Amino acid sequence: MVTAFQQKVYDKLLEVPAGRVTTYRDLAHSLGINSSQAIGQALKRNPFAPRVPCHRVVSSNGSIGGYMGAVEGSPIAKKIDLLKKEGINIVDGKVVDFELQLFTFRT
Image 1 (cartoon, one colour):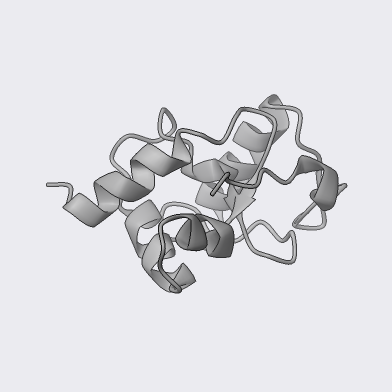
Image 2 (cartoon, one colour):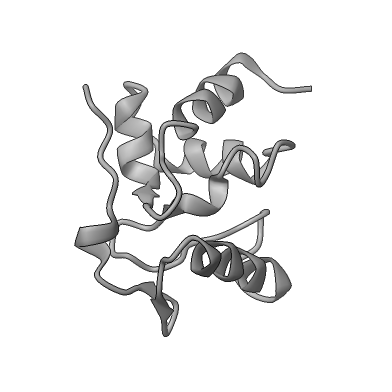
């Protein structure tokens, strides 16, 4: 069961195009909230991945962040693989040229 909040997060996330990333913080602000953690909780429960591309959400410092509720192991390897398939380079757990890859929501 998807909550109304989760659906808002997933709908907004569909705006992030392939080959770009956004941050937990920017996604939260685009929805009028201040909780990056709430975004992370919604994303780790995303039943529509990868169609709803939660793999495109990274930390504000460009590090990969979590995926499917994990911060290491095979879920993170899958997130990196999905991003690489979209043309995003990851080195040492960070997005290369982060500022150039960053998608910002229109307000």
